[in-house]
Length: 205
Image (tube, rainbow, N blue to C red):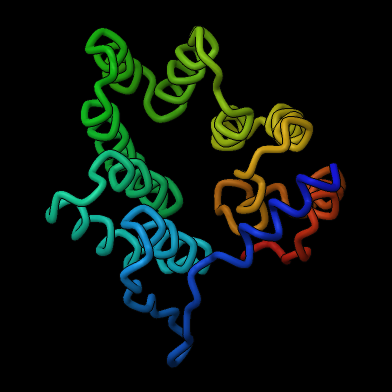
């Protein structure tokens, strides 16, 4: 466990530095030694974690238009739209992410049908079904995000606890991921924050 704590703190120290101007977080240009993915992750951390959704959406659309890390940019764009409550746009971006990632066409069609028949929650449940049926390893954090969006707090917390046991680096974003805003007042969530070594953050108003 000691080794994992070291890794998490290393990841936290490597996060992109930001500066605040008039209450807005501005992402600095990357130095030449940074990879494109690191820069995108820095933008995600800066904009999404501070709930600057319009800036985040604009940023990721620019990345897509530039052909830079297109699948990941669509995925993060879907997260932004979901956080804003724009579920139709979230589904559109998520489907584009799956197409760009080479997902099975039949699986994509099933997701489209689920959304058409049962809306956002139907889409999430079909996605959950596909994830459970996946023969490869799926990060517990991914299951936690789906259950959190479905409003199933107990399941979301259970999968976050498994994510800690698996020593997932995804847990470094636990306290700033808007997907879990509704869990911040839960004692189990606060215990997870302490286990990961992050500061408790009050839920967004």
